[in-house]
Every structure is written in structure tokens, then in C-alpha cells.
Amino acid sequence: MRKRRHSKSNKRKKESTTVKEKVAKILEIPEEVVSDRPKITTVGRKEVFVENYRGIIEFTNEIVRINSNYGVITITGKNMKIREITNEDIVIIGDIDNIDYVV
Image 1 (spheres, helix red, strand yellow):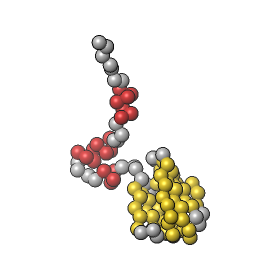
Image 2 (tube, one colour):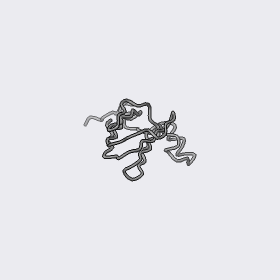
Image 3 (cartoon, helix red, strand yellow):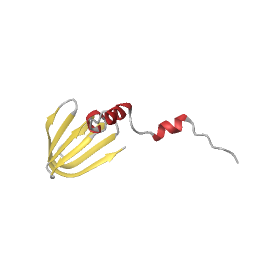
Image 4 (cartoon, helix red, strand yellow):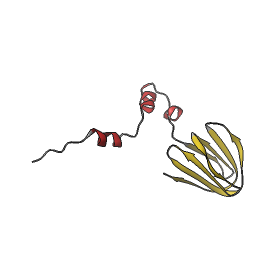
């Protein structure tokens, strides 16, 4: 019988947690505080708050495409506007129809 060896590269691919996330777990800090993953919060169908975004790809009254470290976030609707924007987060307001996340 032949034994299978698992290479280190395969092991690394399976590990999705970063060093920051491991340290946060050890120190009992909420993971979202140190993670670079986007966090999307909606308030009804009128407001979308996106944290940890990388930039705006497209912006019109009907579509907003936002880049993140983990893919593109597409928000569609009507009368959309940017209410607030910083280096780390963005708030979109309007009549939100859909939010898609493409890796």
C-alpha cells in the first residue's frame, strides 16, 4: 500500500485564516476588527454600508461596483448616491434592488 504525502502548498491552500486572524483569535479580538474581508451591512432597502473596500469600479444612478480584496460587490437599484466615503468604508443610499458578490 502506498502512502500519500500532502505537500505544504496543499496545506496552505486549505488554510484560509491569515496571521492577523489567528492573533485576533488568541487575543479574543473580534475577527472583523483585524480582517481585510469586506463587511456589508444593509439598512432596509435604502442603505448599504460596505467596510474594507478597495475602490469604486463603476458608479451610476442604477449601479455601483465596488472592488474588495475578495471580489467585486455590485449594488443595483435606482436613485443611488454615495452618502459617505472614507478610505475604509462607503455608504450607498437609494432604492436598493440587489447586492451581488462575485469572487
